[in-house]
Length: 138
Image (tube, rainbow, N blue to C red; front, side, top):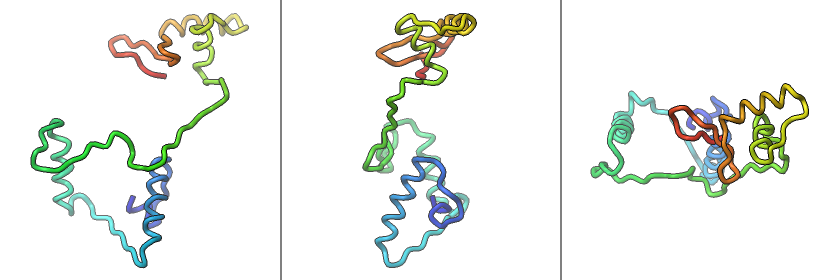
């Protein structure tokens, strides 16, 4: 984030862009602001803290105060919605499993029938069956 705020790098990730705009708004409220990146090897305390957090099991951190964030710490939530029923590669599989409808093309219908054997719909969500893994949400 330091490099993005200093203008060296561009914030391309959507979540990073939201943090960038939030930080930029906070920065604009100050009369003077400076930010400096400190490499991890020059910041022993932060390095030690990151190693401590990644090596201990949850609930064993008795020497530090911690908070687990279950979602990004941004106030507004962005939800992408689409009124379009086209789901890309999932469309034919979804229609076949939900309503038994196959594509008009004979070859595509055969492919859809074979591919759909690896999928299941649970509660209006499409999942792919794995061999030795749990269901994978599509």
